[in-house]
Length: 205
Image (cartoon, rainbow, N blue to C red; front, side, top):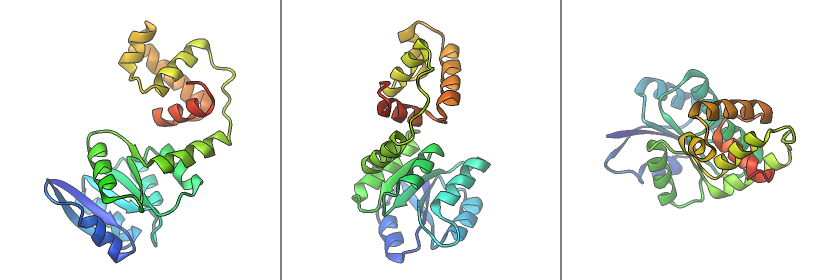
């Protein structure tokens, strides 16, 4: 059984989200604010925490920061009613597992949960557009990338994994990892998702 925790300060929203999930899911807790959610996550260790971005006491973004700082095992999915770019960009940089708009259909949230449990990342397309726009307004120092680093960036932007990049470029996986480390440092990003977004915005793909 996959355990879920839901946190939202609107009772109707909590009930609506909980109502989406039947077997093989079990909603183990419904929380009305961030402090309740924090305590319940630490006590119950759910597989997935579905958190409202804006909640009293602690926001979903606050809990995501704590989750990443302390290495929580649960997957974090954020629900948002709006598309303010800055929190969306921060959520992506913190490697949020999922981000869904509240006006999306219930099927979208179900697909998001399935994706993150499978080890993927699910970010709403409209939210991703906002993130890309925000990143485009802060150009990164791409001019000093080596030709090989640009090759690696293009492969990442195309969704290739390290093994595939290594095979395509005729280098070892260790060399790919070294290039990625250097790229993260040079471009000020912290994940493949950010690197791919930046590549598309800067025309490196």
